[in-house]
Image (cartoon, rainbow, N blue to C red; front, side, top):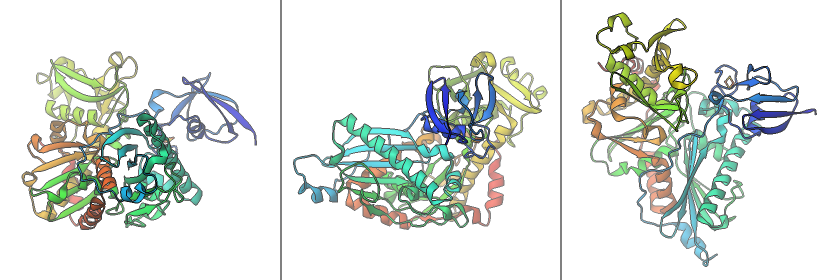
Length: 532
Ligand code: FES
């Protein structure tokens, strides 16, 4: 077959690829991850690149290569390395590893190490643990390479229609884990052969792809998992480059859309001992929530969609360099915090929540999510803020950074973006309200809100409360617990007692399919408005 040379700018990376391959495939081969929000269907427009020298803009996922090419990938089409949250709450556990007893006989001269892994839809976190004292020696994180097949689980399930495509998703995650393992070993100056145990958590789709289990049924109602059980496997079954006799343990899933990562989070925050009503929220494309006490626990998954990850937002992006991550009012105008030492070029989830909270406080947006008519705001707002309200493509918008302030394209928040935020926050808030109904409790009865996951850690509590994303409780009841899934994986890695606890906990948490709840529609509609 004929091959062509593709050069990517500005990196200068070059690859040779067969005729007919798409530019997105070529970029992937060159190690460049593009934004592929729609999974390559050609509908999201996030993978746009420029052909040189004409600068013609094409969608990388739709453009088939039939000549040598030079292509410039604009920043907006790149899936940047995100701010990755690798740290979680400190995992405290009594060390009772089965593995220690088992392998000490085999190789008593060497130390024994383990790996705690959290496979997120977007991010993979790996921790290297000394199994003799429970100490975490090194942590590494990377983007989940499956992202190039779509950035949410639904798109990936749709991609994995054939055995070959499922195998592809499995292979890229195994490669990613092997790379992370090599980096960890390098960092701690140990050998992979001294890793005898691995504990892996993730959402149910990630768990199934890792285990090579069928995933098609996860994409159709009633969204059943093929298996909820914990598994113990060998390196023969999974091509992981650690000790050939190592044991690979995966943790129990709770349901089709609430995976072993939430089992690990629940264990790490010790929900088993919660006397007061506690709400655990992991905000992502799928928001996962657990509510209850040691006696009774409910869990649900809310399809928030990718708005908080920047998708479907006019100037949205992930938490990458150049993204506005915080917005405040200062001195009669707005002030921005931008990731990295650069000018603003997009807005990420935490900035989005802040921006909407600011617009509500200023009265620029009303509780129904509508932009106010600027003529009604004169005298109430400073001229600087007033001048930021514009019309763009026939809809009102707020300029967060003008072309001058951004050194290029202006960063705006439009009426449509506000609607997307309303839909995302309503999904999460409705899920929480429906679980509250199970207990017959009001917001104030919730004594602790624990925000887990990468995104939770960067949002401002006041802004999350202002837009009504979380129950109306005093801000001090909200605590960030970081990457509690990885901390949970570490605990389960180290202790056979916690493996038993994880199993019992996963079976005890009652899953609620919120979309099937009688009041779902009305609760969801109510949750669309912002608090007054
Ligand atoms: S348009 Fe190309 S990935 Fe969505």
